[in-house]
Image (cartoon, rainbow, N blue to C red):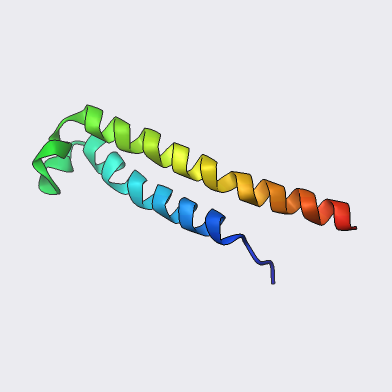
Amino acid sequence: MRRYPFSFIALSTLGALCAIPGALSLAGCGASIHPILEDPMAGLAFIVSAVALIGSGLFPLVIEKLKEGEER
């Protein structure tokens, strides 16, 4: 079984959790969660933050794969 770096799991999970209210806000259902999410631009900010978190989580994964390649 492959072990993933903790930072990859943590940041990707936070990114996915951040994308959920962003998608709901962009779909027009954000007001049911919080009044601030009624604005679609708030949803866009959540989506951008989610992409940044997932991208930050990919760096440790790529570094781990590069280290595995050197060991072979």
